[in-house]
Structures are given as structure tokens and as C-alpha cells.
Picture 1 (tube, rainbow, N blue to C red):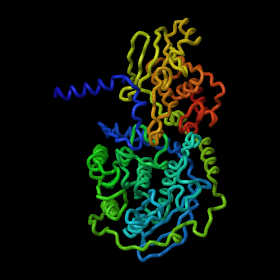
Picture 2: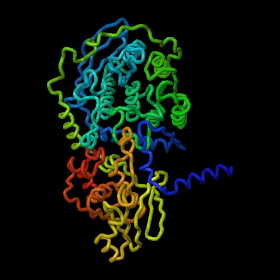
Picture 3: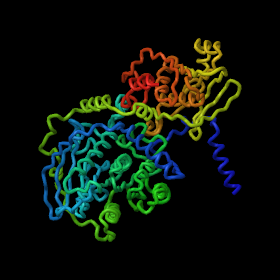
Picture 4: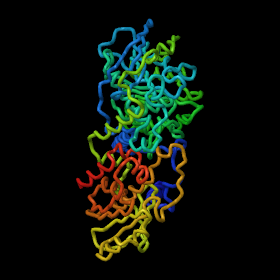
Length: 579
């Protein structure tokens, strides 16, 4: 008992200390970091975390709020009959002028009274996309087998693959695209949501029994769709739930997506709905049975549904091979079809159509209203500008802004250090005591530079208390930060977003209504956005100068991915005015 008390006390002491170095500059997390599991003490704690992560995913994807769902104008044609199933070509207009290609596999037997269960089936980075048919991975094999078993299956493209050709596969890494959260991850997640809509709308499909499965990059899409769309009732992500690798493609790594989280938590968001996770000894899921599965099972246990998540580890390379697929069929069969005999769900021989017989655009062209890449980007920006909803929420998620319930401090004379428990941040500053309401002064060159300004002199002469800080990477807080690691912005906030956070932390420490917040020089922009998302009204004094909130301004002066998608300067000013 004494040992337990000592360990708990040591943990609290560690959380209560401000580190000698700011953790944001040390070993920045990235796609290849070996992450540790998080523990949740109660279902309520997890559900709050789940809702936070759902919005973080949607914000990073550029889908908060979701765009209006326009008519899909589905084109379904080219039916090919087989004795026990048939396959058709499908073209969907998921946004006005933007088209998604796929194939629909259906059983050739009468529909049950409530309809067949459905499966949306994204593919990974296989050479032939949704048409891949090799020993390692066969998308047609799983679609044909599921259709034979009594599911309606829709296989559809990643962006830039097969028939979905209005964008390349890799884009979204240009600063202007990042400002608007425009990239393949968001488009693919939107296509997955609309694919579900399409499948749910079909006669003969049970709208309340639709699941999703995919492997590799298709498993990333499976995880994200299941995490943000509770309509998904069962899932099987294959070979992507890992603590040691989170996905190497731009379509799996949008800025801000995995701030303080991993694919393991994304997988756990499926709870308590049935989920099967496959892993392989030859890839980054090799620790599934000892690390990832126990972490996900712990979340299912909070719901009392531990038996509704299963995992298997195959001695194989990265794959969605036959053994992997048959394990998925058995899991789906048990939970969806009521079939407990896995032997009855094995794959049988099948014939895959010629590629041209499955390609939607073989001897066809896209509709006349099909947008160019720039036209699609323009549409994305226009829809963003027309959005409604809570601008504070949108800006808070783009900035990854936290109003801490508690702020750590260390004071030595007029020197102060601030930080947040458990975050490892370190904010040096100068604290000059006086009367309330206090003033927080932020200078782009740090606290000492602020101290020398006429603004601070006037405040001190009037008897006001003054706090000046070295916001992130300014003044005494300048330190090396390795931004070259893989997918840096997926796991780490930009410098400017961290500066806004430090201002919020300082405001929370002052905890005084009507604090005067003074932003000098380019720090005026930092303070403006901090004031917009602060939990308390502030008396803002910030001359933005030539900063008008154009894309060029953000790229040069205040780079925060997603800030334009969230409403930018206009939303910030509206919030400040509301204060």
C-alpha cells in the first residue's frame, strides 16, 4: 500500500513540475514514434474523449462542419451476371462536379424482409486500387465472397485511383491547401461518408446493418469512417491499428489529425460496435496481441462489450490475404448473419472480370460538369465560406487551443515559469505585481523586449499588474525544433498555434475578467486569435497593421493549418465582438 501511495505521489509530482526543456521541442512525435496506450478510468471519461477526437478528426479533414449533402446522381450500369451474385459499375457525384468511381456487388437471391446487410469497402495503396487481385490482397475476392454470403458490397476508389481522377492521389502538402484543410484525407473521408449514404439508399439494403472493411490505407479509411459516423454498425480494419506506425501517405496524415492520439484510439472509437482487427508479423501491427488489442479491449470493457472486439495475428507480410479475409468473414458471420460455423464462410473459387469490364470510365468520359483540380479546390473554399455552426469551436480545433483548468507556476522574484500539468510545456515570463485587472503583454521578441516598451511603462506607472511572456519560440524560449520528421504537422502544432496556446495558458493563470491583452507587432495576430477562443472576455489591444487575413498573410505571418477552413480572421473578429 505504501508503495502504491508513493507511486501515485510521484506521478502527481511529475505532472506538477515545469520541465527544464519545453517538451514541444524534444523528440517530436511522428509516424514512426512508438506510442504508449492511454488509460481511461470510466466510461464517461472515455466518451468525453471520444467526442473530442471525433471533432478533431473532422476538423483535420476539413469537414467540420460537414458540407451539405447534394444529390449523388448515382449512375449504376454495366451489370455482369454470375450464378450467385452480380456486379455493376457505379459513378457518384459526392460533391457538385466531383465524381467517385466504384463497383457494386449484390447477391442473386431475394432480399430478406429488412434487406441485406451492406459493406462499404475502401482499398489500400495496391497498384490496381479497388481492382487489385493478388495473393497478398484481393479487393474483388472479398467483395464477391461477401456478396455470395448475403451482403451488398460497394468497393470504391481512393482519390487519384482508377476512375476517381480529378485530383492526384498525393496533394494537400502545399501551405495554401493546408490553410483550407484541403487534401486527400478529407476527400476520401467525405467519399466514404457519401458511399455509406449511397449504400443505405439502395432498395434491398438494411439501412441499420452497414459495416466497413479495408486493409492498409483502406484500414485507415475504415478507422476514420467508423470514428466519425455512428451509422457504421460493424467493422474490420486490417493491418493498420498500431502504436508503432500510423500511416505513411498524405491520404492518411492531415495536419492536426493525430495531435496527442494514435490509430489505436481511433480504432477504440468503434466501441461498443463489433470490430475485428487483423495484424501481421511482417508489418507494424506485429505487436497487436500484446499492445494494441489490450488497449482497444480495455475501452470495450468500459461498455461491458469486451467480447465484441477480436484480433488475430497472422504470420505474413503486410496484407489482406485469404486467411485474413476468412477471419473477417467468420467475425462478420457470427455478429451479422448469425452464422457461427466459420467453415461455411470460406472463400470459394471465383472469376474476376477483366479490368475494362469493371472500370467506370472505360470508353466513357466524366460528365460535362466535372471540375478541374483547381475548380474542386475553389468549390471547397466556397463551401467553407458558406458554412454555419459554432465559429469558436471551429477555431479552437484548428488552433488545437486548450483553456487549462489548472496552470503550474514557478515564481522567483519577477521571473516566472508557467506550464500545463501533463503537457510538458514551459513558458518563461516576467511577473510585475500590481493592481487588477492585470495586463498580459506579448512581444514577438519575448518578455524582455516587452518590458522595455512604452506600453509596459504606462501600465506600471498606473499601478497595473503586468505579465509578459516568452511565447513559444520567442525570447528566452527559442530552442531547436526538428520539423523534418515524417508528417510533422500531423502530430505537432505549428509554432504560431503554440504561441496562441501560450497566451491562453497565461490568461488562464491570471484568471481575471477584463484582463488587458496587448499584442505588439506581429504578436497582435497571435493575441487576436487567442482572444477569440479564450474562455474569458479580454480587453484586446492589438493593431494588425497590414495583416488582412489573406492566404498570403497566413503563410507569411501566422501559419496554422485549417485556419481558413475554420473561418479565419472574420470568425475571430466576430467572436471578439460577441465578447
